[in-house]
Amino acid sequence: DVLLQPASTNKTLTSAAALLALDRNARVTTRVVAATEPVVVVLVGGGDPTLSGAAPGQDTWYHGAPRLSDLADQVRRSGVTPTAIQVNTSLFTGPIFAPGWDPADIEGGDISPIESVMLDAGRIQPATDESRRSATPALDAGRALATALGVDPAHVTVTNQPVDSGARQLAAVQSAPLIDRLNEMMNVSDNVMAECIAREVAKSMQRPLSFTGAVDAVLNRLGTAHIDTSNAILRDSSGLSVDDRLTAKTLDAVVQAAAGPGEPKLRPLLDLLPIAGGSGTLSDRFIDGTPAGSGPAGWLRAKTGSLTAINALAGVVTDRSGRVLTFALISNDAGMSGRTAIDALGVALWSCGCVT
Image 1 (cartoon, rainbow, N blue to C red):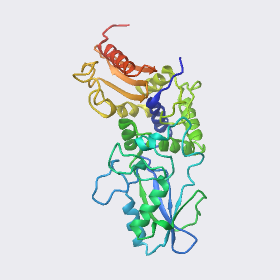
Image 2: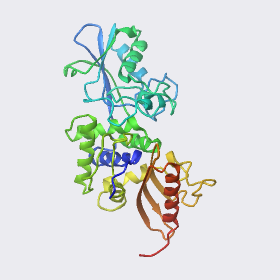
Image 3: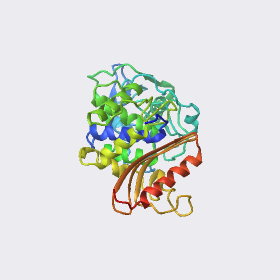
Image 4: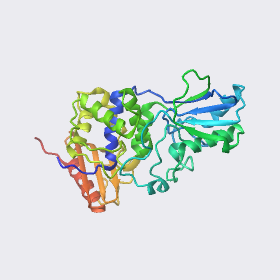
Protein backbone atom coordinates (compact mmCIF):
# COMPACT_ATOMS: atom_id res chain seq x y z
CA ASP A 1 0.00 0.00 0.00
CA VAL A 2 3.04 2.32 -0.05
CA LEU A 3 3.02 4.91 -2.83
CA LEU A 4 6.24 4.59 -4.85
CA GLN A 5 7.61 5.63 -8.23
CA PRO A 6 6.42 2.96 -10.67
CA ALA A 7 8.58 4.01 -13.63
CA SER A 8 7.42 2.28 -16.83
CA THR A 9 5.22 -0.27 -15.09
CA ASN A 10 2.75 2.63 -15.31
CA LYS A 11 2.33 1.60 -18.96
CA THR A 12 0.48 -1.48 -17.68
CA LEU A 13 -2.37 0.82 -16.60
CA THR A 14 -2.32 2.66 -19.92
CA SER A 15 -2.47 -0.58 -21.92
CA ALA A 16 -5.25 -1.99 -19.77
CA ALA A 17 -7.36 1.15 -20.15
CA ALA A 18 -6.80 1.12 -23.93
CA LEU A 19 -7.93 -2.51 -24.18
CA LEU A 20 -11.06 -1.68 -22.19
CA ALA A 21 -11.93 1.58 -23.93
CA LEU A 22 -10.92 1.03 -27.55
CA ASP A 23 -11.36 -1.46 -30.36
CA ARG A 24 -8.21 -3.56 -30.63
CA ASN A 25 -8.24 -2.92 -34.39
CA ALA A 26 -8.59 0.87 -34.02
CA ARG A 27 -6.31 2.91 -36.26
CA VAL A 28 -5.27 6.56 -36.16
CA THR A 29 -5.49 8.71 -39.28
CA THR A 30 -3.12 11.49 -40.36
CA ARG A 31 -4.52 13.77 -43.06
CA VAL A 32 -3.53 16.51 -45.44
CA VAL A 33 -6.29 18.96 -46.37
CA ALA A 34 -6.53 22.05 -48.51
CA ALA A 35 -6.41 25.34 -46.62
CA THR A 36 -8.72 28.28 -47.26
CA GLU A 37 -5.73 30.19 -48.62
CA PRO A 38 -4.77 29.18 -52.19
CA VAL A 39 -1.77 26.84 -52.62
CA VAL A 40 -1.51 26.14 -48.88
CA VAL A 41 -2.00 22.60 -47.57
CA VAL A 42 -2.48 21.55 -43.95
CA LEU A 43 -0.89 18.52 -42.32
CA VAL A 44 -3.49 17.57 -39.70
CA GLY A 45 -2.19 15.68 -36.71
CA GLY A 46 -4.37 12.73 -35.72
CA GLY A 47 -2.24 11.66 -32.76
CA ASP A 48 -0.19 8.97 -34.50
CA PRO A 49 3.49 9.19 -33.50
CA THR A 50 4.41 6.22 -35.73
CA LEU A 51 4.05 8.22 -38.96
CA SER A 52 7.44 7.68 -40.53
CA GLY A 53 9.77 9.97 -42.40
CA ALA A 54 11.74 7.00 -43.71
CA ALA A 55 12.28 7.00 -47.44
CA PRO A 56 10.34 4.51 -49.59
CA GLY A 57 12.01 1.12 -49.33
CA GLN A 58 13.77 2.03 -46.09
CA ASP A 59 12.80 0.13 -42.95
CA THR A 60 10.71 1.96 -40.38
CA TRP A 61 11.18 1.57 -36.63
CA TYR A 62 7.48 0.80 -36.08
CA HIS A 63 6.02 -2.22 -37.88
CA GLY A 64 3.33 -1.32 -40.36
CA ALA A 65 3.98 2.40 -39.90
CA PRO A 66 2.33 4.84 -42.32
CA ARG A 67 4.77 6.95 -44.33
CA LEU A 68 4.98 10.66 -44.96
CA SER A 69 6.09 9.83 -48.51
CA ASP A 70 2.66 8.27 -49.15
CA LEU A 71 0.97 11.49 -48.03
CA ALA A 72 3.19 13.46 -50.40
CA ASP A 73 2.37 11.11 -53.30
CA GLN A 74 -1.36 11.51 -52.67
CA VAL A 75 -1.07 15.30 -52.55
CA ARG A 76 0.74 15.30 -55.88
CA ARG A 77 -1.95 13.08 -57.42
CA SER A 78 -4.63 15.49 -56.16
CA GLY A 79 -3.33 18.07 -58.59
CA VAL A 80 -2.55 20.63 -55.90
CA THR A 81 0.89 22.23 -56.07
CA PRO A 82 1.38 23.93 -52.72
CA THR A 83 3.78 26.76 -51.97
CA ALA A 84 3.32 26.63 -48.17
CA ILE A 85 2.62 24.02 -45.51
CA GLN A 86 0.66 24.49 -42.32
CA VAL A 87 0.89 21.92 -39.52
CA ASN A 88 -2.23 21.65 -37.39
CA THR A 89 -1.63 20.39 -33.84
CA SER A 90 -5.01 21.37 -32.39
CA LEU A 91 -6.06 17.81 -31.50
CA PHE A 92 -3.86 17.71 -28.40
CA THR A 93 -4.29 20.36 -25.73
CA GLY A 94 -2.34 21.60 -22.73
CA PRO A 95 1.43 21.45 -22.16
CA ILE A 96 3.58 19.38 -24.52
CA PHE A 97 5.96 18.33 -21.73
CA ALA A 98 4.79 16.61 -18.56
CA PRO A 99 5.60 17.64 -14.99
CA GLY A 100 8.51 15.61 -13.68
CA TRP A 101 10.12 15.05 -17.09
CA ASP A 102 13.78 15.89 -17.60
CA PRO A 103 14.45 17.93 -20.79
CA ALA A 104 17.77 16.06 -21.08
CA ASP A 105 15.75 12.95 -21.96
CA ILE A 106 15.02 14.48 -25.38
CA GLU A 107 18.69 14.35 -26.30
CA GLY A 108 18.96 10.99 -24.52
CA GLY A 109 16.29 9.50 -26.79
CA ASP A 110 13.67 8.68 -24.17
CA ILE A 111 11.01 11.24 -25.01
CA SER A 112 9.92 14.04 -27.29
CA PRO A 113 7.43 16.85 -26.65
CA ILE A 114 4.01 15.29 -27.20
CA GLU A 115 2.34 16.83 -30.26
CA SER A 116 -0.45 15.40 -32.38
CA VAL A 117 1.79 15.05 -35.41
CA MET A 118 5.37 13.81 -35.34
CA LEU A 119 7.61 11.51 -37.30
CA ASP A 120 8.90 8.24 -35.84
CA ALA A 121 7.90 9.42 -32.34
CA GLY A 122 10.28 12.34 -32.72
CA ARG A 123 13.34 10.27 -33.61
CA ILE A 124 15.96 12.16 -35.59
CA GLN A 125 17.08 8.85 -37.13
CA PRO A 126 13.80 7.20 -38.12
CA ALA A 127 14.76 3.54 -37.73
CA THR A 128 17.10 3.78 -34.74
CA ASP A 129 15.86 2.86 -31.26
CA GLU A 130 18.29 5.02 -29.30
CA SER A 131 18.17 8.01 -31.64
CA ARG A 132 18.01 11.40 -29.96
CA ARG A 133 14.61 13.02 -30.26
CA SER A 134 13.40 16.29 -31.70
CA ALA A 135 12.41 19.22 -29.53
CA THR A 136 10.05 20.42 -32.30
CA PRO A 137 8.45 17.26 -33.73
CA ALA A 138 5.42 18.89 -35.39
CA LEU A 139 7.52 21.52 -37.13
CA ASP A 140 9.96 18.85 -38.27
CA ALA A 141 7.11 16.81 -39.75
CA GLY A 142 5.88 19.85 -41.67
CA ARG A 143 9.34 20.59 -42.99
CA ALA A 144 9.76 16.98 -44.11
CA LEU A 145 6.46 17.16 -46.02
CA ALA A 146 7.54 20.46 -47.53
CA THR A 147 10.79 18.93 -48.76
CA ALA A 148 8.90 15.96 -50.24
CA LEU A 149 6.57 18.35 -52.12
CA GLY A 150 9.29 20.73 -53.26
CA VAL A 151 8.14 23.52 -50.94
CA ASP A 152 10.63 25.82 -49.24
CA PRO A 153 10.83 24.58 -45.59
CA ALA A 154 10.89 28.23 -44.54
CA HIS A 155 7.26 28.34 -45.60
CA VAL A 156 6.12 25.94 -42.88
CA THR A 157 4.07 27.15 -39.93
CA VAL A 158 2.48 25.39 -36.95
CA THR A 159 -0.98 26.26 -35.66
CA ASN A 160 -3.18 24.95 -32.87
CA GLN A 161 -6.37 26.52 -34.23
CA PRO A 162 -9.08 23.95 -35.09
CA VAL A 163 -9.00 22.80 -38.69
CA ASP A 164 -11.90 23.78 -40.93
CA SER A 165 -14.35 20.86 -40.80
CA GLY A 166 -15.25 21.42 -44.43
CA ALA A 167 -11.69 21.40 -45.72
CA ARG A 168 -11.12 19.21 -48.78
CA GLN A 169 -9.06 16.13 -47.96
CA LEU A 170 -6.09 15.63 -50.24
CA ALA A 171 -4.37 12.68 -48.56
CA ALA A 172 -4.66 10.29 -45.62
CA VAL A 173 -2.69 7.43 -44.08
CA GLN A 174 -3.50 5.17 -41.14
CA SER A 175 -1.52 3.68 -38.28
CA ALA A 176 -1.23 -0.02 -37.53
CA PRO A 177 -4.07 -1.51 -35.44
CA LEU A 178 -4.12 -0.63 -31.74
CA ILE A 179 -3.15 -4.13 -30.59
CA ASP A 180 0.03 -4.00 -32.71
CA ARG A 181 0.91 -0.58 -31.40
CA LEU A 182 0.34 -1.69 -27.81
CA ASN A 183 2.59 -4.67 -28.38
CA GLU A 184 5.43 -2.48 -29.60
CA MET A 185 4.85 0.08 -26.86
CA MET A 186 5.00 -2.53 -24.10
CA ASN A 187 7.89 -4.53 -25.54
CA VAL A 188 10.34 -1.65 -25.89
CA SER A 189 8.66 0.56 -23.27
CA ASP A 190 7.99 3.39 -25.71
CA ASN A 191 7.14 6.57 -23.78
CA VAL A 192 5.84 8.62 -26.71
CA MET A 193 3.51 5.85 -27.86
CA ALA A 194 2.16 5.47 -24.33
CA GLU A 195 1.30 9.16 -24.09
CA CYS A 196 -0.42 9.18 -27.48
CA ILE A 197 -2.40 5.98 -26.89
CA ALA A 198 -3.55 7.37 -23.53
CA ARG A 199 -4.94 10.35 -25.45
CA GLU A 200 -6.89 7.92 -27.63
CA VAL A 201 -8.45 6.66 -24.40
CA ALA A 202 -9.16 10.25 -23.36
CA LYS A 203 -10.86 10.96 -26.69
CA SER A 204 -13.09 7.89 -26.33
CA MET A 205 -14.16 9.10 -22.89
CA GLN A 206 -14.70 12.75 -23.85
CA ARG A 207 -11.77 13.95 -21.76
CA PRO A 208 -9.29 16.64 -22.84
CA LEU A 209 -6.48 15.22 -24.99
CA SER A 210 -3.81 16.39 -22.58
CA PHE A 211 -1.57 14.85 -19.92
CA THR A 212 -4.17 15.52 -17.25
CA GLY A 213 -7.09 14.41 -19.40
CA ALA A 214 -5.33 11.20 -20.41
CA VAL A 215 -4.47 10.27 -16.82
CA ASP A 216 -8.05 10.99 -15.75
CA ALA A 217 -9.42 8.84 -18.57
CA VAL A 218 -7.07 5.92 -17.87
CA LEU A 219 -7.82 5.84 -14.15
CA ASN A 220 -11.57 6.25 -14.62
CA ARG A 221 -11.76 3.49 -17.24
CA LEU A 222 -9.90 1.13 -14.92
CA GLY A 223 -12.30 2.10 -12.16
CA THR A 224 -15.25 0.94 -14.25
CA ALA A 225 -13.56 -2.49 -14.34
CA HIS A 226 -13.50 -2.48 -10.52
CA ILE A 227 -9.76 -1.82 -10.33
CA ASP A 228 -9.10 0.50 -7.41
CA THR A 229 -6.85 3.37 -8.51
CA SER A 230 -8.10 5.86 -5.92
CA ASN A 231 -4.67 6.46 -4.38
CA ALA A 232 -2.77 6.77 -7.68
CA ILE A 233 -0.87 10.01 -8.28
CA LEU A 234 0.06 10.23 -11.96
CA ARG A 235 1.42 13.10 -14.05
CA ASP A 236 1.77 11.13 -17.27
CA SER A 237 0.77 7.82 -18.87
CA SER A 238 4.26 6.46 -19.54
CA GLY A 239 5.82 6.43 -16.06
CA LEU A 240 8.68 8.72 -17.04
CA SER A 241 7.66 11.45 -14.60
CA VAL A 242 9.51 11.38 -11.29
CA ASP A 243 6.28 12.71 -9.73
CA ASP A 244 4.27 9.55 -10.51
CA ARG A 245 3.24 7.40 -7.57
CA LEU A 246 1.50 4.00 -7.54
CA THR A 247 1.25 1.16 -5.06
CA ALA A 248 2.28 -2.39 -5.84
CA LYS A 249 -1.28 -3.35 -4.89
CA THR A 250 -2.73 -1.20 -7.70
CA LEU A 251 -0.29 -2.58 -10.26
CA ASP A 252 -1.06 -6.14 -9.22
CA ALA A 253 -4.80 -5.48 -9.41
CA VAL A 254 -4.45 -4.59 -13.09
CA VAL A 255 -2.48 -7.74 -13.92
CA GLN A 256 -4.81 -9.86 -11.80
CA ALA A 257 -7.83 -8.51 -13.67
CA ALA A 258 -6.19 -9.55 -16.95
CA ALA A 259 -5.34 -13.03 -15.64
CA GLY A 260 -8.75 -13.64 -14.09
CA PRO A 261 -12.10 -14.47 -15.70
CA GLY A 262 -13.96 -11.24 -14.96
CA GLU A 263 -12.64 -8.94 -17.71
CA PRO A 264 -12.12 -10.87 -20.97
CA LYS A 265 -11.25 -7.65 -22.83
CA LEU A 266 -8.17 -7.40 -20.60
CA ARG A 267 -6.83 -10.88 -21.35
CA PRO A 268 -4.64 -9.67 -24.29
CA LEU A 269 -2.67 -7.63 -21.75
CA LEU A 270 -0.87 -10.84 -20.75
CA ASP A 271 0.30 -11.32 -24.35
CA LEU A 272 1.67 -7.77 -24.40
CA LEU A 273 4.03 -8.40 -21.47
CA PRO A 274 7.69 -9.09 -22.36
CA ILE A 275 8.84 -12.68 -21.85
CA ALA A 276 11.64 -13.43 -19.39
CA GLY A 277 14.81 -14.23 -21.31
CA GLY A 278 12.92 -13.97 -24.57
CA SER A 279 11.55 -10.61 -25.66
CA GLY A 280 11.52 -6.86 -25.23
CA THR A 281 12.90 -5.32 -22.07
CA LEU A 282 13.15 -8.76 -20.42
CA SER A 283 15.22 -10.33 -23.20
CA ASP A 284 18.46 -9.86 -21.23
CA ARG A 285 17.08 -10.85 -17.82
CA PHE A 286 16.53 -14.28 -16.31
CA ILE A 287 19.17 -15.80 -18.60
CA ASP A 288 22.36 -17.73 -17.91
CA GLY A 289 25.06 -15.50 -16.50
CA THR A 290 22.70 -13.11 -14.76
CA PRO A 291 22.26 -13.08 -10.97
CA ALA A 292 18.78 -14.55 -11.20
CA GLY A 293 19.79 -17.29 -13.63
CA SER A 294 17.61 -18.75 -16.36
CA GLY A 295 15.05 -20.61 -14.22
CA PRO A 296 11.96 -18.49 -14.97
CA ALA A 297 12.91 -17.90 -18.64
CA GLY A 298 9.78 -18.45 -20.69
CA TRP A 299 7.64 -18.89 -17.57
CA LEU A 300 7.53 -15.27 -16.42
CA ARG A 301 6.03 -12.34 -18.33
CA ALA A 302 6.18 -8.83 -16.94
CA LYS A 303 6.38 -5.12 -17.63
CA THR A 304 9.62 -3.59 -16.48
CA GLY A 305 10.20 -0.17 -14.97
CA SER A 306 13.55 1.56 -14.69
CA LEU A 307 14.62 5.10 -13.80
CA THR A 308 17.63 6.35 -11.87
CA ALA A 309 17.74 4.19 -8.68
CA ILE A 310 14.16 3.01 -9.46
CA ASN A 311 13.21 -0.53 -10.50
CA ALA A 312 9.85 -2.24 -10.83
CA LEU A 313 8.36 -5.39 -12.32
CA ALA A 314 4.69 -6.35 -12.69
CA GLY A 315 3.34 -9.44 -14.38
CA VAL A 316 2.54 -13.14 -14.19
CA VAL A 317 4.55 -16.30 -13.63
CA THR A 318 3.64 -19.97 -13.79
CA ASP A 319 5.13 -21.76 -10.80
CA ARG A 320 6.34 -25.34 -10.63
CA SER A 321 2.92 -26.51 -9.49
CA GLY A 322 1.38 -25.04 -12.64
CA ARG A 323 -0.34 -22.17 -10.83
CA VAL A 324 -0.46 -18.76 -12.48
CA LEU A 325 0.67 -16.13 -9.97
CA THR A 326 0.40 -12.38 -10.43
CA PHE A 327 2.89 -10.04 -8.82
CA ALA A 328 3.98 -6.42 -8.63
CA LEU A 329 7.34 -5.44 -7.18
CA ILE A 330 8.65 -1.87 -6.79
CA SER A 331 12.03 -0.78 -5.45
CA ASN A 332 12.88 2.90 -4.97
CA ASP A 333 16.28 4.38 -4.14
CA ALA A 334 18.16 1.07 -4.21
CA GLY A 335 19.71 1.20 -7.68
CA MET A 336 20.88 -2.05 -9.27
CA SER A 337 20.61 -3.91 -5.96
CA GLY A 338 16.87 -3.28 -6.14
CA ARG A 339 16.67 -4.86 -9.60
CA THR A 340 18.73 -7.83 -8.40
CA ALA A 341 16.38 -8.32 -5.45
CA ILE A 342 13.31 -8.06 -7.68
CA ASP A 343 14.68 -10.68 -10.08
CA ALA A 344 15.48 -12.96 -7.13
CA LEU A 345 11.86 -12.66 -6.02
CA GLY A 346 10.74 -13.57 -9.53
CA VAL A 347 12.84 -16.74 -9.29
CA ALA A 348 11.34 -17.52 -5.89
CA LEU A 349 7.80 -17.22 -7.24
CA TRP A 350 8.63 -19.43 -10.21
CA SER A 351 10.23 -22.08 -8.01
CA CYS A 352 7.33 -22.12 -5.54
CA GLY A 353 5.58 -25.46 -5.39
CA CYS A 354 3.55 -25.12 -2.25
CA VAL A 355 -0.15 -25.83 -2.05
CA THR A 356 -2.32 -23.26 -0.28
